[in-house]
Image 1 (tube, helix red, strand yellow):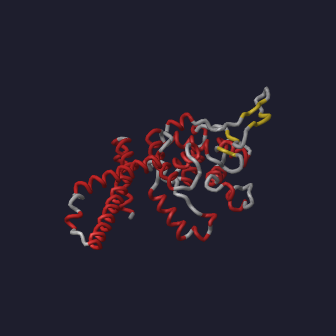
Image 2: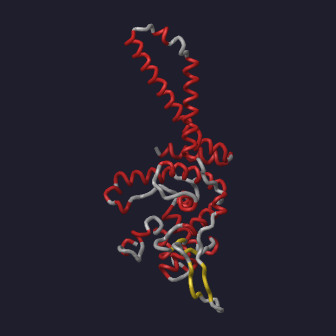
Image 3: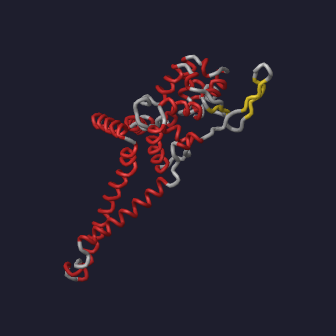
Length: 288
């Protein structure tokens, strides 16, 4: 299993170097094509079996019944069915799919700060989401490292999604986490979480997950890792009305994010996974 994951990782890296189109075909088109081709063959096989049973019941010579249904016609019908299935599925999964360019035009709700003549803050004005933008180069390195280590250890190396992370989360949830619903793990990367919050919806469906995976690969080819991480740190919820690490730092510690200590940065890094459970201001502060 580990060797297979390593080989898959190398294939992904090679395809990423070659360009976006081959990788798009691999992720989006090839699996669907293979799956629907096999489904079409199974469908045709079942129809042939049904026709065979019919010939036995009505005692019609098999050659006479299949005389018109030649092999070429069967293949033609199969290709038509296959094409229709691919088109319908493609339309269902990827209709109105956002693009990475939507992240550039995406304007998260920002808080309005009213200051006095000396630059001291008097009021904050926001609705639902209290968010103030912060730039990655303003944050201490350990703030960035804490987020990556807690949320996505393979962030700097993967291409949008992590096969090992998905397998690890599935194993934990099936054999360990099922005994404690509050400690279930997810396999989403930082890139996937950004896409879910900024471009998609939080609905838990297979369709949304497939769209999220495709967009994650696409975004990784469009933006640098630093750009993705900066967008994530300004987008994600840290509990309550605090969105983005800047307002999270003010809500929990009363300071700018650039002044966070290592311990404070580590605590904040764990909040996006389950803000209600891990919040130091929540019902179970001991879990923070």
